[in-house]
Every structure is written in structure tokens, then in C-alpha cells.
Image 1 (spheres, chains in turn blue, yellow):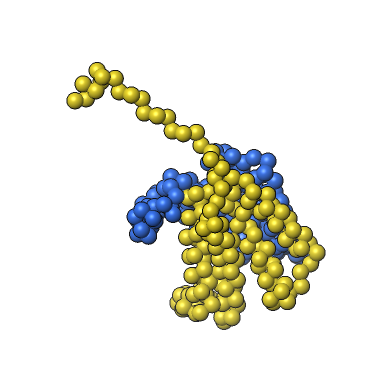
Image 2 (spheres, each protein chain N blue to C red):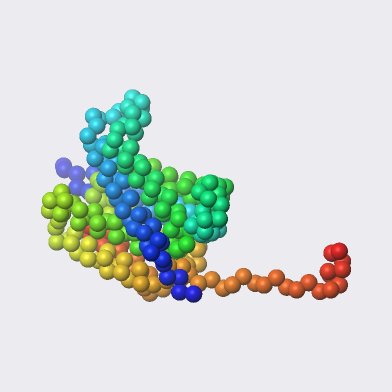
Length: 135
Length: 148
């Protein structure tokens, strides 16, 4: 029997789990990184005040930043693992577009960003657009 | 405060949008031109880093991360991510007009949707308004004396 095209030899639940792992790790990483950068302040101003070294020091001395980068690295390895079992045509559009939606929700919940109708519509349009473009 | 962006900040968002897809393209091109790499010979993976296409790809991705961090320091995550998705459109247009790849109707629909979405978010404020921090309460003369 031939294997259905986008799932390769993996079942639909396993595929959903792999994509969910990428989306979860990526969203956590993005939110932690964004929180770190907000706690540091405007990098352009820091660079103007204390030079490039000062800006780099401000970033690398923030523990939240490293937590964010750790989760982004986890997302990268989850992506590699998923690509080993699933086709790129499924993994890339699904993870990229779902991450946009989860980031909008996480931004509102954890970063208390003002995700108004304009931003949620934009996230939805870009999400569908990325899916169509990469599919 | 409307939190409108300056021309310099738009340039940084442009760098985020451009560097990521271009870096990925350079890495992909570099890796496909190399012979298959096996985990039994990890040194060949290290050697791959120094080939021109991959080195340029890595430089572009470092540029992407630096400009992405800078953008996050003055704009919301929910603003930066949709706004920089325009890079996907640029790559689609480059592949059509530079590499002469065919683009299906579905992909053109994707290009239009992303463009509209980016237009939507770019016209709004980049940063959420925050209530000003609570002012420090005045210390009473008695407490001031005690501190002294």
C-alpha cells in the first residue's frame, strides 16, 4: 500500500504532536525573547548611550534572553525531528502559520499586548497567506 | 503617544523581513550543492560552514537575529511577526521574476493575503500603551528624620 503524501510513514496523531511541539517551543521562545527585550529597553537608545559593547552586554546579561534562545533552539531541533518523519510541504506551512496565531494569543495573555481587531485580523490574514504560499 | 515608527525603525523591520528568507535560501543552496553528509563524519558538517554560500547564509541569519532583537526592544511581538512576514512575499516575487519559477494561483492568493495583513498591522501602533509607573510616594518629614 502506498503511503499518503504529506504524512510519510507517520500517523496523523503523531504528525499533529510533532507540529504541536514545534509550535509550542517556538511560541515559548518568541514570548520569552520578546519579554527579555522589553525588560532591557530600546536597544537603539542603549547603543547611542553606551555603544555596541553596552548593547551586547545588556542582552547577554539577561537570563530571560537565554531562556528564550533555549526554547528557540528546542523548536529548531523539533523541526529537524519532524522533517525526518514528515514532508516539508506539511511541516513548514503548518508550523509557520500556526505559530503566528499562537503568538498573537500568547502576546495578549503573557505580554499583555494590545491585540485589537486590527492585529488579530492581520495575524489571521498572514497565517492563511503563509499557508497558501508555502503549501 | 502614537508609537509611530521612524524611517530607521522601518529599515530594521525590512532587514528582519529580508535577512531570514535570504539566509534560508543561501543555506539551502549551499547544502544542496554539497555531497550527502553522514553523521559518521561530523567534520564535513563543520567544513560546510566555511563554504561561501553557507557562510553568507549564516551571516544573513546573524543579521536577522540582531535586527529582530532590536525590533522587539521597541515594538510588540504581535506587531513584529506579521509585519516581517512580508519577506515571504519578496521571496515569492524573486522566485517568479528572477528565477522564473512558476507560481500557482494559490500562491498568488497567499501573496495578496500577506500583503493585506502587513498593511493592516503596519498602520496601527507598534507598541502597546502602558500606564505610567506609580509615582514614589512622598516621604513624610518624620520618616525622613528616622532615615537620617
